[in-house]
Image 1 (spheres, chains in turn orange, green):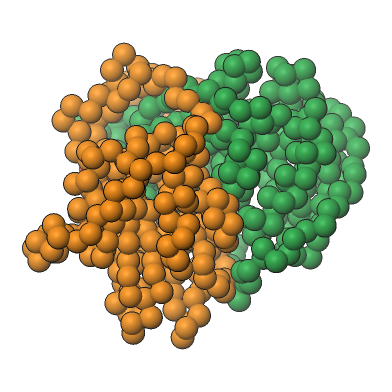
Image 2: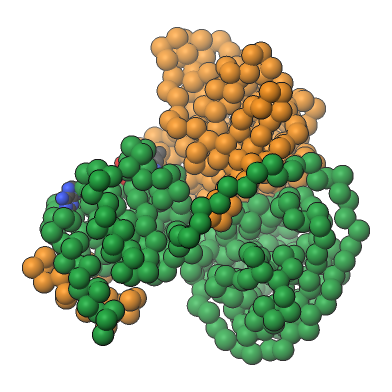
Length: 248
Length: 323
Ligand SMILES: Cc1cc2nc3c(=O)[nH]c(=O)nc-3n(C[C@H](O)[C@H](O)[C@H](O)COP(=O)(O)OP(=O)(O)OC[C@H]3O[C@@H](n4cnc5c(N)ncnc54)[C@H](O)[C@@H]3O)c2cc1C
């Protein structure tokens, strides 16, 4: 069996977000990383491969992006992916990206496709379910576990106030979130060396139009400064929450 | 032509957030000289369904089939697609929760309808159709235009006020022939946590960070939550250390919540933490370090030791509740 992990190339989560004329992100000094959810998904894919007794023999990663995303892809290879695909296009909206990924892999026979629940740039929370529809296969969202049960695969799905354990025949897309694994893996020295020679296929995009357009960006208005309450007079806080903020 | 909401019910009931969604849809419908209707698949009773009328929903389509008991997004989208076609809907709106995040994108791909998720306010215009959404984990906002005829939105929690406008909605049974071959998953087991206020539903949340120093010190957090009728939450290191269950972890990599009141105790206010709670209406911070970043985003702050402040706060709250 083969696993595909969809990764997104995003600004580091501690980036101070600034825009140029409110039109585009000011990328000066921005560190780019694998979207944290996708990194967890990749880690889980490698764990599954290692514990599968050979049942899973290949883990690939894919991203849609220009040549500038290659360091991020190489990092995924250094962490342990066996091969990578880059669809050579600037990422449009999620519809565009999911469509490109579907077209690039539709005949590749992936059994399990993992995608993160959200990306920390545009917070679309929509890629994985779109991909499932484009490929006409099951998509399961809010996934906090993917496990082997003999040769069967079970998927844990978080629901309000609990979780469901699903039996899930391949192929499927699992949209993963917290719980999928504990810590993201970091590349080893050997991983970094071998990543250079692992296959990275570059494919050209197919025709597709984005359905939405980002017009402009703005930063939140600064909150009025914090009102300090004397620790010796905690009652005042309760008064304020009741009479001024009216939240209790 | 009608604007459609997907009204999710649990155990035969709608949550307040569904009524917020209804209120929002009714307001958008007004902007578009249209009406707002709801699709219900959970089979709540007539009386519960009628409640949607209190928030401006003028018609309810009720669909029920055994196979929707297992929630599968492909199956559910077949139903929604049929409603969109039958009612000629230019706009479909979901909640931005687990269900909405599973359905809206699948429907978008199916109908080739532009989707904007985590919308926070009414459209600034409907022709062209422009909405505002959160981006960069709530560190910024973006204005986004949808270019297709049919449009899809998910509405962020707690971003629109309940607005009463009484209508007496007609309830219609809706049925279609489902292609059940798409249903591949089955539920083997359900594990429920019972008896607690759900974090994502809670109006008030009391949260503890590493400043609480250990799981044995959590009682004041629990007591304050109980006194306020609040849910409890924690920062990521706290759940990583196993001091608290992972279901309580809020932040960019945990749950994203938007309560009316968030009380952060011994939490420094890291950017990834605030990504999960930045939409809270009012933030209270209790921290012994006056320079902790949490005070930059808090509305009210106390610089002090949580172990001294919390007991006093608990008694002040109890006193206030007793009044
Ligand atoms: C990719 C990524 C994703 C992340 N996602 C999340 C996330 O989803 N959620 C999250 O929370 N974090 C997340 N983090 C971690 C985040 O960066 C911070 O490390 C974390 O939020 C800090 O938790 P804390 O505030 O509890 O602890 P600390 O930062 O250690 O803060 C403890 C605070 O307690 C105060 N304190 C100590 N003793 C007392 C006392 N007696 N009385 C009063 N105050 C006291 C201290 O002054 C300090 O401000 C993420 C990090 C990364 C890199």
